[in-house]
Image (cartoon, rainbow, N blue to C red; front, side):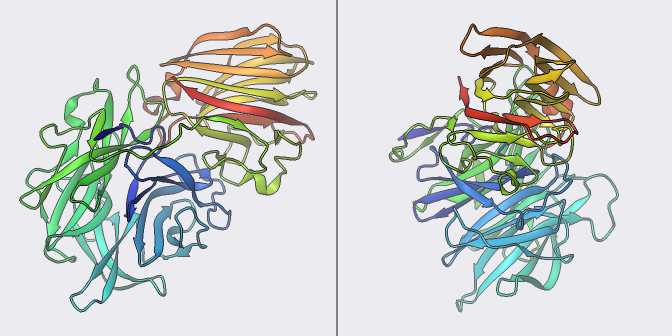
Length: 520
């Protein structure tokens, strides 16, 4: 017996889809405007997860030009059938719903098979079923605007099903609405997944929107086409009734899995508040499932998420992973991301041995572009982000350093800048249209170390030049402006290295010897 700590995947890892193949479990999550797209996580014990790759690793698979921060890739589903992994998702910015396939979950994955206008809406899922004569059928399930009456109110959508031919990657036959949601005047019935157990087809979906009213509901039918009856105990999981002060909110969008030994579980997204705000985005959580009267019960006797999930058997032996990044290998680690495009395809990021070289591009973090920004997800509210950098700005507007980014309009940049004819250390906060300088002082030339210490909704910013005395640039900086509550959107914060010339052509660059993000 052992325990899985919740969240099992902390920080900006929403819309989880889980798939078991033998003794191995795999999870994929949404990635929105970040590149590469759709991280893949693996474990054998449901507790100790490791990222083994990304599904969408080539620009041909993931066009994101001009995509807003919360656009791009929504709600992937991962399934496995007869030796092939299938991942289906929506690129809401370019192309709509598509499928990619692979023989191994770490890839390489195929080019996208776009499903066209017939695959309307978002949140697609695949379900494999077998007739008594052994004929295999695959069904596409998704959510779309209300077909019969039109969209009468915001979120007036419906869940539908249609068979799909995986040889041609085309929808075939009739498209049929099968469910509107469990609640009266439901909004955003989404994230549908089909399962089969004991002769019933089960349709699990999210509804209520992905905010504080989020929930998981379930219905069942003797036919994949319906009619579906709702569970009289719906929603089967929500935190909407626990109040705004409860530390975990927005719980919903689940996917079921069994361990092959009679035990069932569900993964879902949820958000952790800190001092009333969410900066880490929507995490992935785990809960137990039992069955009564052919209906699933989530965390029986508890009815909400728990800090830890008791699991049978013995945990996998996993070495602790350090989030200290050195750049001797000429590729970025799997959990490092850029915005909208693979920066490494255009620039030699490893031209200098042992360093990550970021060009001072004209693009900035304020634009829907591909800035010189390499980041990882913020996972906790107590953290130390640090980096060692060599950068000598020499033209007005050139800057490089560390950034904490929620989106284009909500960010903090901690950088060495050339301004007013001299080199300065600057802390700039952007909360909307205006930028605010909250720390500035002259700095000598040479190698620089940067530190950001996060303490809940406060952070302190330190720097050190040429190994000399560590200096405090700004203390107790309020971080709540980078939260979902104030910034909106579907992502959480990411922390990383960046460089920019702020709209001008420049041949300058910043060399990063290391980057670290430690949680405490």
